[in-house]
Image (tube, rainbow, N blue to C red):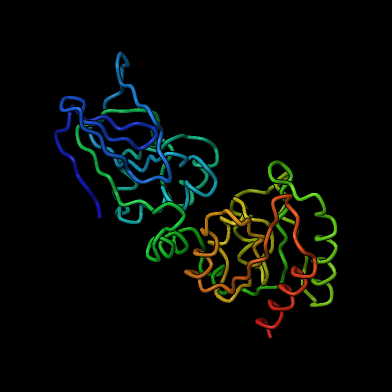
Length: 283
């Protein structure tokens, strides 16, 4: 669905996805998991544009939320529209711009902040944590070269978090997974958030992985590049969004959940069982 608002001189689009008709005091929100509580447009000078496609949402500058909720809205645009129109996002940070480059949006056409436009197009964005099958398939097809969709899967990839929600006994898990990979004759890769390669290389690593294992978190957004049949082991908090489970099922991956306790630990025996389950799906 693509909503068009024409000759809307009194309509303002905020960085959080609020679409406001200032004359009639009407406001609607474009997608997003939550929303900001207050929005003030008084006494601010806004830049005006002739025609804009807006995929701005609350939180959509984030590592999961931009590609899987905001960016997938561009699935409804033609190549000409993507290349010749202004694309409005919440924030032009480096991460957002890398993803836009992958879907062939020129940096000069990307705008952010609160703006006003004469003609506004609002594409259907991804639901919170649950982009549609069509949106997922569009993104995967757009960002992946053909040879990465069916290549040889020869590695076990372990995601390591060092900045937030750090697992205190991660070294034990790493040793377990590394030994498992050796016995299975698979390469072992640590996806460490302290030293990440380019986005393209990250996606390539996931595309070449037979097993992906790690805690619930943004690193698993790269599952979009994995091939059908890849096994995913997620350390899942009791209170968490099921976004990666849903993404795995939509991509045809074999998903296994291992409980992640409030102290950021897991039962090492359950991790071993999950890896053995993954090995059975490979044979």
